[in-house]
Amino acid sequence: MPWFQLFQDGPEYEARKTRRKFTPPDLSYNELRQAVPRHLFELSTVKSLAYISRHIFFMYLFFRLSLSIDFVTPAVGNFLELVLLSFIRPILWLWYWGWQGITFAGLWCLGHEAGHNALSPYRPINAAIGLAVHTFVLTPYYAWRVTHNTHHKSTNNIERDETYVPMTRKDFKLPSGEIAVKMDYKELLEETPAYTLFKMFVRQFL
Image (cartoon, rainbow, N blue to C red; front, side):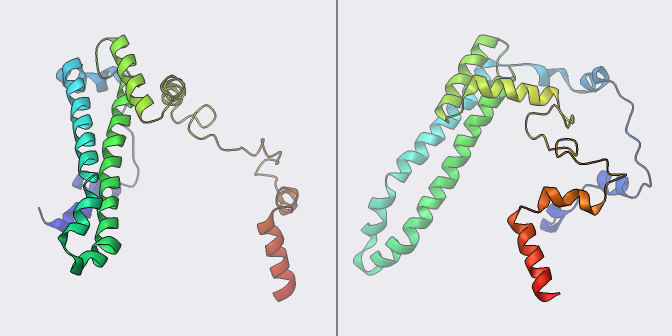
């Protein structure tokens, strides 16, 4: 596959864009679930622990390699020491932080799956894994799990979602958009620095 095709949309999406009207398929939850191969719903404690062990191994490997950065860079010689200290060493530390961040993010994601009881068929094992992993990456596991499950139950509900609930016109005590006029927004904006700066600009230059 040519490299530039990595930045192109799939043929199914391109064909869908040419349609004038999109009609969502009328499928039930059970129909969608039955379309997924059964083996994908099977949970394996051993496989999940193997994933966690792999992340811990790479986390430790990156840590051990990082301990050598400050000792390896000056050892090449005095001729390149200044370049190494001012240029190569920061690059190595940035490389370490980036890859170590990926391993930590992977551990957090595994704790996320534990919060959904998706690592093991046994809930106590999921809870133990999630608590251990999320505590290690400084996330309050049970508090996060409650709000995150509420988020999933309220997906696409603009008033009940936990991730972000925007303020409505009613919250701002604004009238309906059908009858609102410019003066309705004055009390909302007139004390903000941006609005004051805009008024000063209008008065001085227009």
